[in-house]
Length: 296
Image: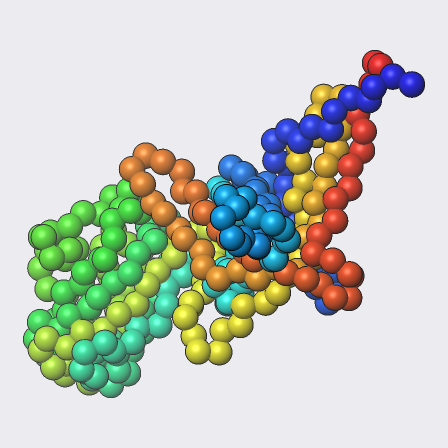
């Protein structure tokens, strides 16, 4: 009988977390830098007398950890590693704007004394941008508006800042009783309350989304957030000779999802999860392989 070809693991193809109760996948990671399943054991030595060497050595515990370098951020990563399932929004063919809410004081976001609503202006949907706004009352009937990021200012009509405090209107905007007034270059309009009488220096906030094919929102850090246990399949890249390798890690738990941003670089999240015994399946993980074609 000829000597068999060595078993080789090459590359990473996919990592698929799955629900422990249903067996269904949460999704899969395919834009991956690496997947490393580390098994580190400890040994206990019996030393005594003048011997420089132990008289006995026995194994104690083995720690099992899955480390992933992910180059994509699907919704399930937030659920598994930050404890909160995101809300997925349908596409918005006209963009959208959130309700305006008071931040400091109470006179601006008010159907009587301030701004009754903020909406997308018909015919100017292409100007709606991805940003957050702060409205500040200058007087009883006028406001200044500030945009907290400029990343989307080039969409549609080009917008710009008027000063270093991120103001976007050159002169105060007048809010009239029951009337509408445009926010130029942003595709939005304000509707005044029934009897406008704002308090100077009050502030309110809102945000907008441009025309899109879908969006996601999630609030992390709630006291009721739950970090679920999950299983995961780690699949190596298929080799040219047809060799295949799969790790099925039965039970995992992870906490923490970094989201680095660096100059002119794609974001890579270094994620870890600890593996532990699944009594129902009688182990921690399993390995499946398919031998490649052999010319032996």
